[in-house]
Image (cartoon, rainbow, N blue to C red):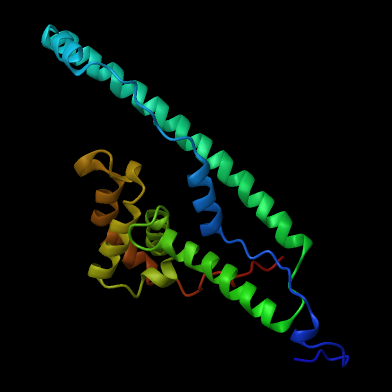
Amino acid sequence: MESGGGGFTDADVEVTTDTTTVDDVDRQVNANLPRRTRRAASAGVAQVMLSLESPQARAQREAREAAQEAAAQAQRDADREAAREAALEEAARAQASCPPLSYSAWHSSIDKNLSKGYKYFLDRIKEGGDQHNLVEFYDGARIFNPYYAKNLSDQDAFALIEKLGNYPALRVGGDSSIITRLKKSWKTYKEEAVLVETDFGKDFKIEKV
């Protein structure tokens, strides 16, 4: 494909663009992490020692081992994340130093990298993703716009209030929780909301006097 200046085609350019993706980095990091090892111990001796434990001693040992394993796992996660960040930064520098130089190279880069970034974003906000509850909370927050709320049915309003419950503190208190009180006050709120004639949405501007 010729450039607008009558210059080159794809065949004229030796493409050396680094096409490392996030998935490639993750595989590399996982492959380089040290493998967990277990100390070899005599099964017979270990069994004898365990059989001599009192229930209290066993409970204390298991709690201690669980705490040690949790701390070790936290350290492994931290090490992996640090290695991942370093590898991503290195891959970003490599790609920035040799950008695509042809149409096909740009197309390949976009398809391989930006599409994965978009998928990564969607995976985080979809149901089961680590940011899904936050998205649901903000969706529920629309009920606080009276111009929008006044047209909601009771069923739709309660569904939005339930989404606010993705912030756990709003459910604390049972029958006296904020979520419960919002539901109880809904009808009164809607009666007041129908009086609102201005849309206080994102395009609303306060005029200076």
